[in-house]
Image 1 (tube, rainbow, N blue to C red):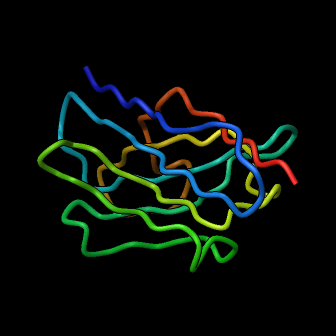
Image 2: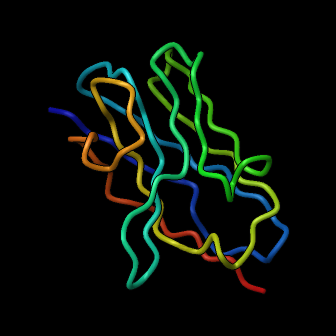
Length: 120
């Protein structure tokens, strides 16, 4: 049984940092991605990392502020988020895919999400 569990969300002020974690169990996946969904908006891609960690990608608005990394020994992927702004407020989900993709529909497995709220 595949399970993805996110943690690390919370309420912070603008300019603060958070580190999200996504613990995967059940099998090994090629790609782990982070997505977010704000109220009334569609789920959007944030960052993704390949199985060996050699390939990463980010949405433009988080480049230079967010860093995705993975610890394969622990089956865990991290999203370090710095210089947070109120526009980053959303529920953050991690997803697992069998191949490299940044498209939401390419991820068959999802975690339950963790809330990130950034106050101004």
